[in-house]
Image (cartoon, rainbow, N blue to C red):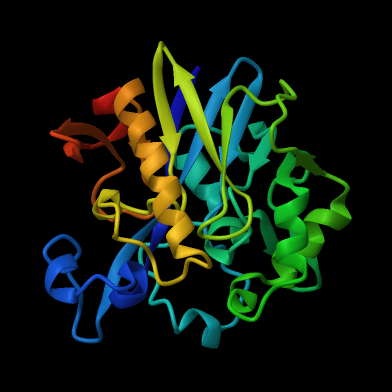
Length: 279
């Protein structure tokens, strides 16, 4: 097995939204904000090469929305997902599976392309993985999340016939990793927990978007159930310490991954940097 990070660019989000009730005087020490209170965040995906499978975890934002939409997010150094895969040393045609942690636009938007006349899958022959509870949540969105679930990202995947649903509390054996389901950020977000050469790596998606979010009360304002997020983080962090899990961050603008340590029950980042250096 081989793990390869795939970088699709940066975007900006409000620092207060990303840290919820945590005061700016605290979080700005770790994630600096500009004069508009916007912080820079990465859109980082992951390729899992396992035998004849090449699994892409998340796809970035994509580029099919209009100028007004993108004006809210101040994208920079953007790379279309297929080009990013080529830069990582693979052909997009080698992708056999697209695993979507959840269906917010910055995680699944790159899966669908705008050809000018219609929409098509970026990986037309790949199996796309979600779960029924989250799919129903995304396609019948609540008012809080409605702006993050875009029909043009979802309908083409379903219409393609390439969509497969995973079930919670099942082990279909169809993907070479464990899946952790969490509900604080959004309903049934899925986090891959990958074992490689005896070492476990967790793709953190939006349970912990960056190293700063390892702190238990540092929860995003975007989360639909923030108290549940704290509970899920606590459970995961205990497991991460016990099993020495490496955390891979989708949105940390500086660090791809981190190891954790515990001192008198206080969990913190002990080492951070590139995933290849931590494995």
